[in-house]
Image (cartoon, rainbow, N blue to C red):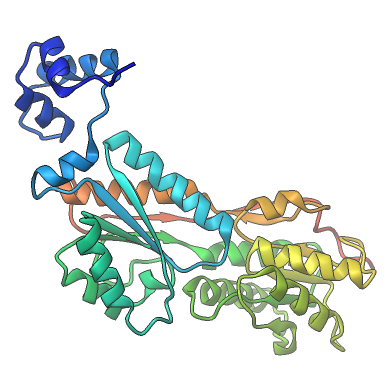
Length: 340
């Protein structure tokens, strides 16, 4: 079956090819009745615009780029799916660009990608989104940017942002462990270059302070967002003189590693040790017992970031719109009352 053409859509709707193009480009000057006729013809004929041709036909680009440096495959997949959902609804393509935040020539790398792929905007995730100098350098390319960041408030007015309140969510998780009677609570940190690690650690410390529980720095293990960090961190903490009765891991992958290590050491979960993660990724549901965690809706966050970026290009919303998410506590079987 051959694909419908823009000429056939125009004929079906009884309008000019230019009008069809204006509707597909979501230009505001088209009458509502005309727009509805064109969209009805598009639906009837299953018309799909040739995005490559649209990009080449003029100065307007219909591609977005997702820039990331994150070892967590589930996080990356959720982000891609969320952005793709918005792109498909609004007729955009997605360029996925993994790269290293440690690359000294990262600005040049992204600049070349932008020029080569002719993208209309960038979605930045940590740690790139949290580096103002990097963001300013990319803004010099005269391209729209939306950042996904950790924090309870937008740190500047450079770009629109999606903020994730990791601090409050981490506070809630730690508070939950405290309510179960745990006072010796370990913390396994993710990458120090990610603000999410900083915010989650702050939330953990604040909850302890508010409960008048003294902070024991020996119960904090610094690592990165990986299963291996969870294994090494749990082994280290469980060998500690002040052995924890609960461990809060900076994400679910770390928590899954901590659970694995506990099993190797014949430590029962949650009988002898309660475990909590963060993000509500598949890691939290694929372990046994399933992990208590904080639900961070990454697909929804990514979809809204893409919609903000597209709207920014079309100037449908103020330049510096921001949204905030607070991951919500999900109680599962990996946490229980402290044994007396």
